[in-house]
Amino acid sequence: MTSAEHSEIGVSVAEWVGAGATYELPLAWLAGYPRSGAALVRTILAHCFGHRTGTIYSEADLGEEYNRTLHALPRSASNSEVAALAQRQGLLTFKTHERAEGIWHVPTIIIVRDGRRMFESLRAFYRERNAVEYTMTELIEGTHHWGDWTDWIRSWAGGSRRDTQWLRYEDIMADVPGTVARLAARWGIEPIGHEIPAFETMQATTPTIFRKAEVSGNGGMTDEEEAAFWARHGGTMTMLGYGREGQ
Image 1: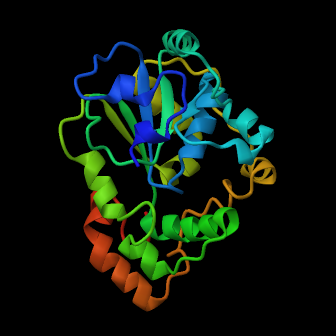
Image 2: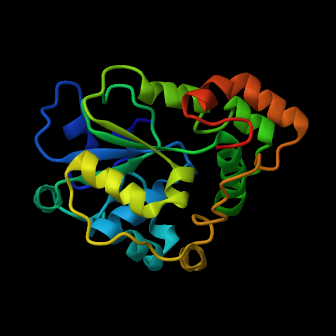
């Protein structure tokens, strides 16, 4: 499915990412392969900038506390409300897990994470939220809904993108104030603070989203799984600045 086919936001994705669309509003993607840390970035935008953020997916089942933590944009927002909010904030991001094909002209914050820990988290997410069990090998090989991780990264890294900022989950966890400063400098937005709720607080409200905050280790992979991971995704890990020790 394409992003537009998923979308229920006030300004349809097709209107502002379609072929030949004119970029007018300060709208941007927050793009991440699932379980890379998009919710963490949205939390920073909410608590450190006072920004509302949107998503092209339904998150109704995650509850009101989750939406309050993220200061989520109501899915019932009208076109005029979205436009006014975008102008007022200076940046209005919509989360997407889709690949980048056909949407090069839209400014984007891309969140990435060490693929080993990302796959461990995704495996647990599939099990806990969707009652689906995937093997680590299936996730490494991309034989599931979201496909191959390296192909996903390449789709966003390739082409000619006008405005892009790459963030690493591990860097954010190590230095939230530094991340706030980088976001402020890159997008010309003014912070209102430099702290977010304690991870334990967020975990208590939505444990399926805020699970462990692990920033080291190999995601519990066996030696065979890790060898397969590096054979398939080693180039991507190197490009993103990760080594076999993690950071």
